[in-house]
Length: 353
Image 1 (cartoon, rainbow, N blue to C red):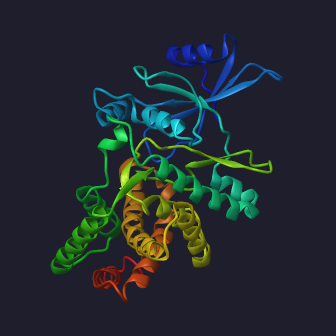
Image 2 (image 1 turned 60 degrees about the horizontal axis):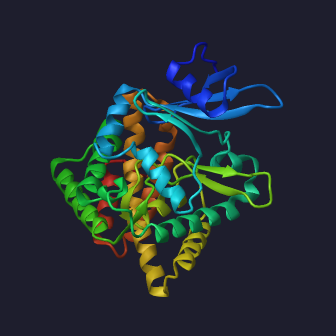
């Protein structure tokens, strides 16, 4: 990672306030799909080294954070972090903040994402995913009653947002890739998308991380006997269908699971939430329908990130993501006429094969 020769004054002030005076190194970290930038801070020398991660939100992104938060709120990242920590969810420790300058100083959890840990220790897949599902179930239960004025309370996966995401897929996952619907097919797609969005939006809502997947869960104590999971990238949390984060986790675009593995983890969730057999069956139906919505959105988003933001690193996940949507559509088609019609539309346009 390249070192930053002269750290900004605001960052230096945060580091000194957190760790005391002394020399420190700032190294740029690889970025993701957002405008945020991350830097690894190494303060002092062995054996008294202290480490942190600095998150920088540039002016354009900072305006977005402020707009999302509203005048009475801290940045959503900070507010949601405090909310989760207060309800027993493990999140990165906060060492300092200077939001006016765009900087946060956070605990350094290394590179131990769930995705990275499983590359080295595949035997941990089942216990860690069982933990992830149960952690989610517990968080949903404890966050059923949100504090008055909480930013999460004022954001929801409503019909318009779910529908917009499907139109985003049509624009970027279909048309931008050189596929096309004829005029009549386009109207059918839009009508199916609207009905699917309305159906999902009508279900009871729970706390929703919105991107609860293997790159946004860090493993604390991966080499120990009882590793735990730390949530990150939660600033977009809102209220949404209970199955949404389960889909993000178990139909993760960056992982591949057998159907038996997915069903076992849904059973773990059902047990943790105390669902009846009928409720477990309904959860399965919700999971498949949300998979269609979420995976189509993801595929379109990956193309958008390439074409608009100039980041091609997600393109290799477009086809695997569409395959997850196609598999869910095939399972739903015998009992869901709209899903059978949607599958036919996507096959005829050669979006899925």
